[in-house]
Length: 154
Image 1: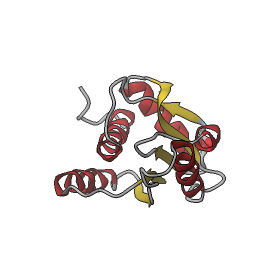
Image 2 (image 1 turned 90 degrees about the horizontal axis):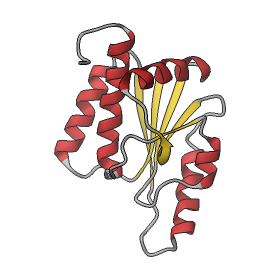
Image 3 (image 1 turned 45 degrees about the vertical axis):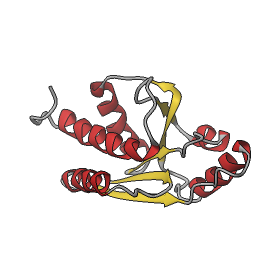
Image 4 (image 1 turned 30 degrees about the vertical axis):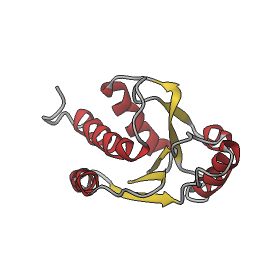
């Protein structure tokens, strides 16, 4: 199994990189993890153009048969137990490859949301796209723990 996180931009904060590395390490028991970073568009261009550029770069990193969940403020909210079921079924439906897409500061292009098999809203609150990487990796780790009935989730 392979989890791919497709995201715009790079992580600059060491503490955030350390947290992401910790959850990638924890997840290695269950799946390999690839972080596919694409260049984020400059703030100097119009939003639609930025979304289009980032969207094309992101689409190029998604294998055609992969199951894709886009992290989107307009997606469905769900408890961790339901997300756990979606993660496991996403791996099954995607030929063992699950892709989670995190947009840049402007969100996601229509091409990405159209490509997504599902759209997930982590919270009605807004998080930076960099912090979202850590949060979603922790949630995927929790999903595996729930699925395998292992101690962690409360």
